[in-house]
Image (cartoon, rainbow, N blue to C red):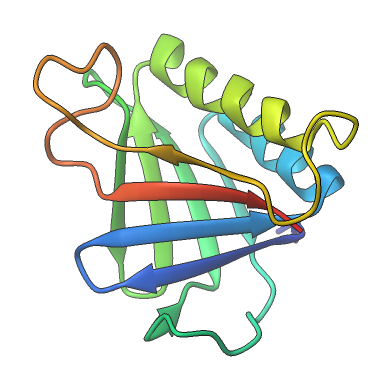
Length: 128
């Protein structure tokens, strides 16, 4: 199983924060574009988040984009078109000519969201 350079912090049933280097975010985008896929995540340095996750699993599903957690694994699921949208957002953040270190975007459900399911955890994607 490959390891990608993205830290994954977890605030119990509320929010995920993905913090990655440009290369790490590009690796995550590649996983999203080739489901099913799995990878190990590095042990995350301490932060204010109560937990970190050690694996990521990308799965095709007949749903909108959904982030969930099982044990210490981030589960990213949804239809290919929705996974592709999230992949493009990861690649957008990986562009270090546009985004300085510490910059971030929020991926969050709102009523009638075009690609995020109501069941999804909120996600912050940050460049480190």
